[in-house]
Image 1: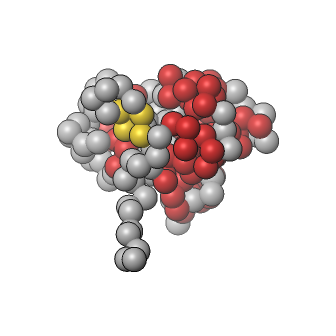
Image 2 (image 1 turned 120 degrees about the vertical axis):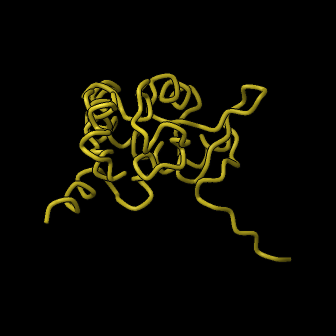
Image 3 (image 1 turned 180 degrees about the horizontal axis):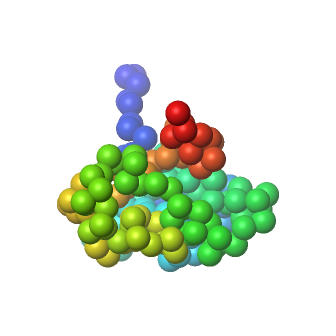
Length: 147
């Protein structure tokens, strides 16, 4: 039998499997989705599928809630502080057009007005959303921005 390689961003896990893999109850995952902390792939039927990145993100959100003592609003604010404009290399001009640059209350993937760098891109594939893939926490990523 051949080994099949699946990209970390490929949505393959159902909600119940994502719950098992992450160790997080289904109702909590649904709440994280409703509050914009995670963006699962949504099929035409309305069912959610999750990728390996989503599982890592679920675990990070849960860690912030349980060990970090943050609430959902605190986690949203933390995600809002990720400098997406630096990650995506947006120009100063484009930043002014982007709600994610101006807002400090919700993450960039929830911005209604996006700059040209992000306007037609799938946020699930963005380096900002996928930050948990390469960094164990947001602070470790922010340290990379300091020369």
